[in-house]
Every structure is written in structure tokens, then in C-alpha cells.
Image (cartoon, rainbow, N blue to C red; front, side, top):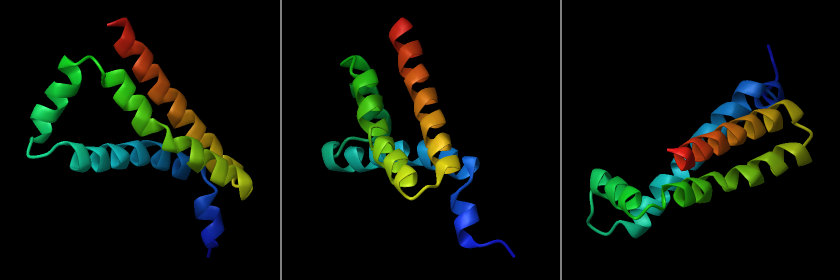
Length: 99
């Protein structure tokens, strides 16, 4: 039987956290700032105001703390996963800027 720490120190764990954490932050920001606006209207508002890349960057920023936390506790595979997913998010922002 594998120990719990081996599950935490996996590339896949870091990738999943690097993906889910920004989505979770998005929903928190949405709940705090949307008022009585629906999700679709909120997306349209972000897109129409041309702040989508700023919003994605805001949501991805907590990945830095996840990366540093994994790094601090010597979970280097997980920290690589978070870093990799953060780079993917950065590429998404870059592609949106190009469009």
C-alpha cells in the first residue's frame, strides 16, 4: 500500500491542482462580484470589457502559492505539475491576446 505522501508528490496531482485552483478562484470571484448576474452574462461582461486576460491572470495567481508550498515541502513532482499548468494558462492568455 502506498503512503499518502506519494499521492501528493505526483505530476498529475500538481497538474490537477494547477487546473482546479484557478477555476475555484474564478467561482469565488464570481460569487463575490456578480450580484444577481448569471454566469453567461458575467462571462459576456468580462469579454465585452476586454479584461478576460486580466481576469485569467488574477485567477491563476494563487498557483504561485501552491507551487511554493509544494516546493517548500519537497514535493517537487507536484510543484512541476503546478508550474506546467501555470505555463499552459500563460499560453492561453497569450493566445487570447493574439486573437
